[in-house]
Amino acid sequence: KGQITLTMIKPFAVKQHNVGQILSDIEKAGFHIRALKMTQLPAEKAEIFYAEHRERSFFPQLIEFMSSGPVVVAMLQKDNAVADFRQLIGSTDPSEAAEGTIRRKYAKDKTRNAIHGSDSDDSAVRESRFFFSSMEEFVY
Ligand code: CMP
Image (cartoon, rainbow, N blue to C red; front, side, top):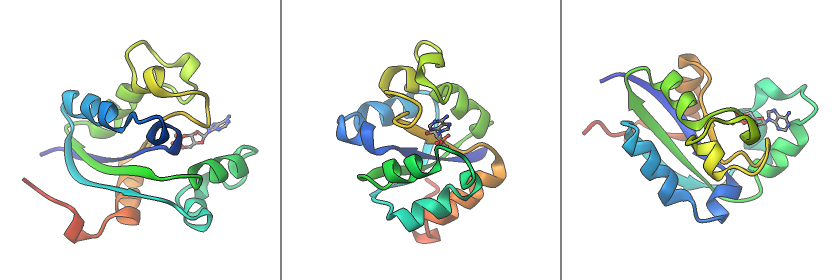
């Protein structure tokens, strides 16, 4: 049981062949994978996913990067999933991310920051519906 959160391993980390290591870190931290896929976001889809950042200066760069290659998306379940996952991944800026966090280990900079984590329960639900249908979600 527990809460859900949505994660995306971003294009740079996929290209660096860090998918297996990152999923391993996630499972070792006690997260249960409810749904998982590799896909690529066309820019128009990335703009919808990141709509809340539309007015930010980094938005064009974010959209270009996020649509530049495949991403690995997963719906995760755990008690306190949203907050615990944000702790596991660390700060947006990898130079500020704590030792042992996923961003500290696998991120390059604020854009190529390896991984996404939902910022609230509402975002987790919205982002999960964005990527997964009910037939792609498993309780096991
Ligand atoms: P994420 O938390 O997955 O979703 C929003 C993204 O915006 C964030 O990851 C960063 O990759 C990106 N982002 C946030 N702040 C900056 C910034 N100052 N410069 C570049 N990218 C940023």
